Image 1 (cartoon, rainbow, N blue to C red):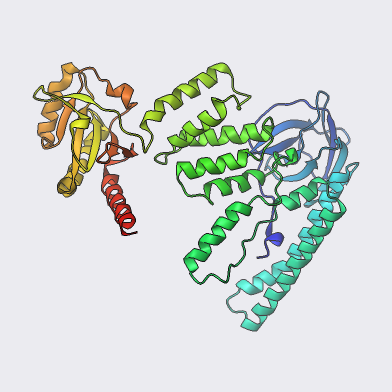
Image 2 (cartoon, helix red, strand yellow):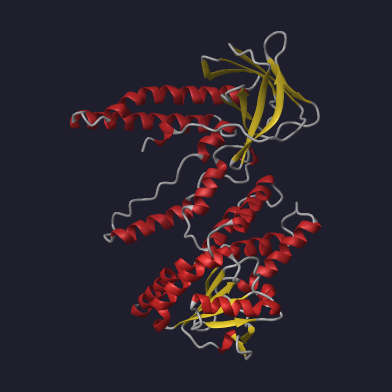
Length: 475
């Protein structure tokens, strides 16, 4: 409610890039006498500096370049030293020679000469600021706990009326200037509001229906082929909310959501490139268990197929190699077998273990983290050993150090685990072991159900798996 009165563009400039462009933008700020003024722009969730202007003898500042025009988007004029700023638009109409005037006392009140896009933009912002001033007192009344209920109700009605006025004004701007950048901004920030579905009496089912409706209609009015939106503060926020908030935190759900978003961009566009790179990197660095599956999906779908037009050969080869290394160890895959040797020198294997759950525990006796993890593993095993759980414990030392491994087993009292080693250390390749301790949880079919988890998480994971199995059986 009242979202239209509350939308503010509040972002700080940060980061550095360099660019020389064909534009001439003169800025006059009454009361500002610093040596420099900075020009920045938005891209995804960051802001970048594109140019710096120096104070002229007349007291103004001119951003100018002669090789190419500025890319369309919302730009920031950033003041020194406190990073105060105001914004302006660069559209698609070649309107890149103009003057902006404002004052230190009223930095949000800007006048534009020579730019129809910015004149319309500042008129719109001025209208919103006026409505916000009108609504401030009403909101204060509503939040004041001493306000009489009748006055609260009256204030809410007036706020609704103001909201309707803003909505009508936005509709008029869009109708009168359908191709203007400010109209695209208005359309892009109009949220999709799910129907009430009042006919549904089951509240949980009704909310699920609204959630599904919102997923289906979230991008209504947001044209992802409009390249003006790439350099705005809201595009990334809207897309990231759709992917990381509206979706179930499961790699399959997130992969489908990313695919739906990327399919809306032009395949050779900047937006397609930037968002593909962003969500590939996010998957690669995620701490959420199983998100490596999303990384593999991104590489297979966009890089391996040649759709990532920006990637060079060396980078591409490395990403494909990494994805291929991760693939056999994704959750849901059958774990690779392990040919091992017991402390008695007998051959055994992972697949020889017959257990409802098998915990693979890769450790070293001289690993500080293992020394903290092993007591937690012991506590877990004491609780779950009679519930179909086996610990397949692998010392990752070489053959010359195995004696110390078995001494450590005796010291820790873990001889009732399946204690094994591999003189050839093939598990480093098969399980991508880069550090210890590393823990995998397998089901009775040796399917990977969780991995790279902490020892103190094992009990909760198994309890949750059993609850899910019981719920499924009950259905």
